[in-house]
Length: 321
Ligand code: AMP
Ligand code: TRP
Image (tube, rainbow, N blue to C red; front, side, top):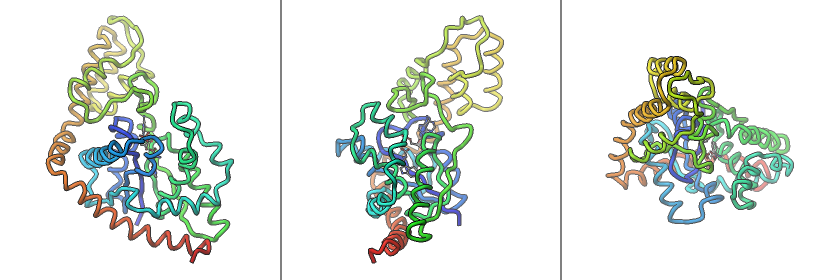
């Protein structure tokens, strides 16, 4: 059975980049193998320093993910910190990880440049991520393009461990969706919480509308034709509208005569409609708060069955048993 695994950090409200880059591909894969999806709360400690906020974020991500179609009966959905073996394996892996490998990581430099504390945890984060993946003998890891380097590091670390201790870990493959590799934000850069350019999946109607209307465009006058290439409006519209509606908008871009304001209104409408079923499901789930605890407890019990075997194999390999 194909083992699939991915994780998401509970660092805040989920946005369209998370949805199309990671959540939707993961949800689509849940029937194609034995899928494990987890909330990466150990990872989130590198940026969330308020314990109540972290707890609230974990619940929020769980609600969002299930509302978006993750089905805990068809995959194993759990919280990372329920399985402390992630941290133990990270230590074992850290002893085979060359410093140079970590020093080359883009995300550490990017995150420090954006103001995160330059802690050891942040620096060593790719090792914990490698542990997350290797602990489940994962074959396939669906993530957005920004995680590609982390996956390459995971493969390197696994190979180093296998070279030193004999064949212990399976080498995983990334799965990066072509069309949703990088979802642009309101300013055209990669959509990311730290760029303040996000469109949240579960924003209130008014808030969502205001955000979409604030999308940055060039200053082509209403009557003039508008560039189709590199248009953020079109890039987002392609994710949420039907092929016919997209074609229509592309045609109107090329013809001229319609202003960006109109296109943005249409984009807002399409986003709002796309997520309507998810909103309904989320509201239902919220009425039943114990359900999330039950789902995560059940997921942890199932995840532990796999993790216990692999961590034991790793301890054995290095001589701790
Ligand atoms: P983050 O919240 O940045 O830790 O991302 C969580 C997941 O969403 C990762 O798999 C990312 O690759 C994916 N992701 C985040 N932002 C984007 C984006 N703008 N486009 C595509 N995928 C994204
Ligand atoms: N690093 C990922 C992110 O920031 C989250 C993550 C942690 C992850 N561990 C993982 C993703 C293992 C896939 C597999 O989005």
